[in-house]
Length: 205
Image 1 (cartoon, rainbow, N blue to C red):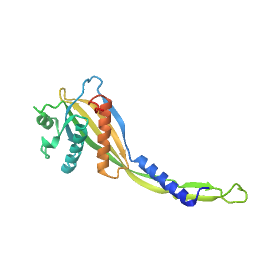
Image 2 (tube, helix red, strand yellow):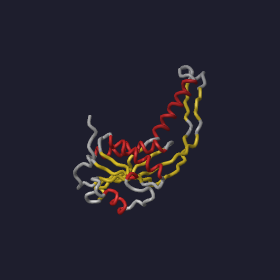
Image 3 (cartoon, rainbow, N blue to C red):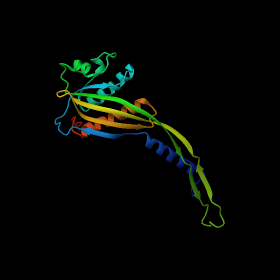
Image 4 (cartoon, helix red, strand yellow):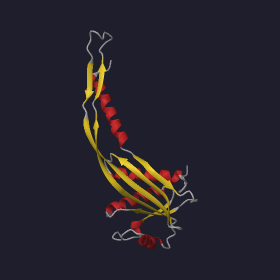
């Protein structure tokens, strides 16, 4: 027999698993240039935001993760003034003579607020096999509305030799409770996809 306490505990655990499953980052669109061959190993990282502190943080986190691959990576804020508008001209001026073979640009495309109703969970349990004589016990957790945000991010990789886009990915992060979690998940996904696609070298085992 399942006790009232154990059932409520189970409901709480299941609720936590459901909410936790929603807190994830997944690719919704990915494209790569099939005509490109080779691997990049010296990349300039650009975070497309006008928030200086956020830009520094994102670029530093990307550089740290890429360096562990290992790929030589440099944050753009060390070569470009924060008040400069990102454009082909400013990027070309920053990478001139630096030996970069790739430029990685990541930016936030949009934020969608979603309200979702979670219906109540009900469990009917008979106290014994004498169902005709024993009434069922009805345990339930009440329904509730849950609000969360869906963040859409885009990350592009360019070949400096041709100045052409060679890889692009749009991803969604759902139920992002902390900005740092979004950044870390996006970086992890980006490196995973670039490694799988052979655009950067796989991490040595």
